[in-house]
Length: 341
Ligand code: SF4
Image 1 (cartoon, helix red, strand yellow):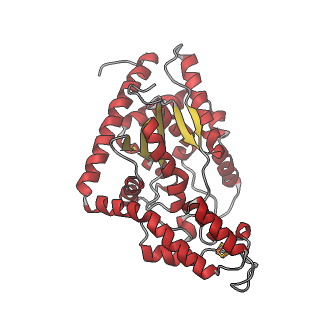
Image 2: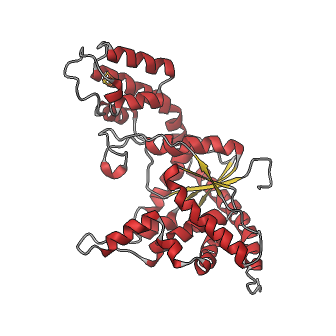
Image 3: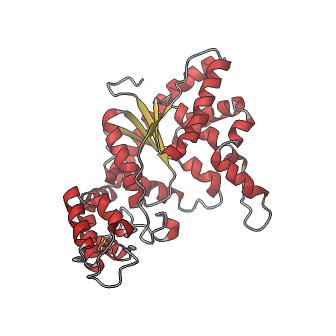
């Protein structure tokens, strides 16, 4: 358990993918904002994880890392409540990764669902064969090191990511058995219902699909993008009765951003054919902009005060290193490593 009055310690990270979209905001960040009131939270930008697949294109790594932190702060991650740090600034994680690599059987790593798919692709000959590095094969162990660096109690995950936590639990148990200790917690998954927000074209929302709405988009761009959102495809005229349940994207955005009363009103008017899709999406865009305004204003404030952001990251890195060092001291001792520090 953590030393303060909170219910335990949590760690979670995100790769530096650049400016985040509303899927990240609703699916992850709103949950982090809630968790920070109850738990001692460590949130990190996983720049080492980015290198596992993008080691040959690091031009935007710094800028992308910065943008991720700006979006976190905009969304309400409060540096007074949470520790924001950059993975590569906590060398203790790399040291722990080495120790854990030594005790992790190879077949444990190979059963990771993502690596299973990759291994299949590697076996496929042809131009699209992925360039797999030693680092990529070891990423489940690096992820275990991220979790174990702070000996956390919980890791917030969606149901499809539980397998990733399992390997960290197995490694922690193996460490404890091997070195006859109870040093490591077996971090539990803190399951969260992650609402999936589709892209405007109805596919998974993502930067590379050019269908996303970013937290940092202007109000004008947001309104334009919302106008492209897929609606009930069976509707020909604006006074045809609509089917909100078949309105693939626009109605799901209403459900994500409006209150219950408004959702009901939209639903009833749509079914009764009293709501044209263009007007409906115009109103939806305005509502989304209204909800996102305080978030965007906060982002603008941090963009205009880079020294505050630098300080937040610096302090987060320091705190993370300090806590990680305490854990590493215990690890070295349990493993009976030579100690001439
Ligand atoms: S009126 Fe609104 S809810 Fe109904 S189909 Fe059109 S966009 Fe969707």
